[in-house]
Image (tube, rainbow, N blue to C red; front, side):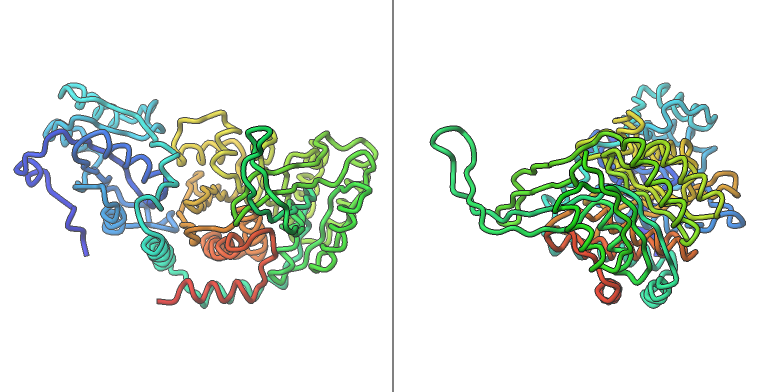
Length: 505
């Protein structure tokens, strides 16, 4: 059914709307970047009219050809959109001349566009005395949903979005469960930083009388493996086989990691280096709220001897796996020489490559990883790598794709979920994308959500399963991870149950 927000030029002219903004786009799939852009447009004027491009996708080349009716439906679901006007590119400038909007707002990606129809549209707006504004919307507005809706409403809305996305892509729960039951045939090698995460549960005592600091009483503590080690543990918990190559210190934390990995079904190859302690992070928590974190780590690159041992073990293990997963926390494990060796080995044995560079307090760049099967940056990491704080998500993602040439990208957006991009190198570089909302409304602990997504995506894509189906599975998996404090591997049984309940009406 077509939306009641859809209007005609005549209807808008008769209604005498004044002080309105006109936004324009194709809106093949609605994701948080579009929401930010349209919200900014709405806030800039009294009313918002969205001109939606009527051009349809070329069905011969497009795997996800969303017709105008579905695109209109998606825009209509956005509360602050007042009217929708389908318009062809050739008629956009004429529409502006007729309507004379106060502001014509385009995404930042169009700022330097030389496309004739956009140049004409901007000239028409200026001739009418209105403003042309380029804006991507404020990223800080993306996480304010709980201030605008109660938890129950938000959960229902996200479930609806997820189900509608899966329906549009013809994804069923039966299909997803069938996919994960095939994962036992996969064997992966995970490389990266071993991290030990410890959580200290505390009771708040009050403020110190001696200095303006908070005083807490430590009650208990619990220890987990993290970093690349939890990625490997997720992979085995999902039924696949996994070897793990990392460097640890000659200390009790390294011994703990080794035993925990074995208990989790991982085959560990941990090289001991007396010059660098096993990375250890301790978080102090009061009533599920983290107060602060203390880290003990060494972030210098591996010395030549340890690096050589690492490469020799990599060469030994790589011929026996389907793919290599790099989870780089930028603590010096994944050196340039090791990365080059990984690329050469992957080329030689036709292995899939999966990469994530996690930069919370350290300096790293996803641009180091090129020609991978999958890259999984979050928005902050993408902006840091490109030194770009202004562009919209779509432009950020397209630049990352152009610079690194991956087959797929997962752009993680925190509380807003993630966007899956499939780069079709054989179809003139076309990219197809789909947003998957976060299924958890009020998470207990977001640490490790990205690790679980990387694990699920690596296993599914190694099996040759589709990006979109695997993304739906990863979305369900991440919702399980954030519901518990600390990094705990998600079993295939829990994942199956979450998929069933998520799809249930």
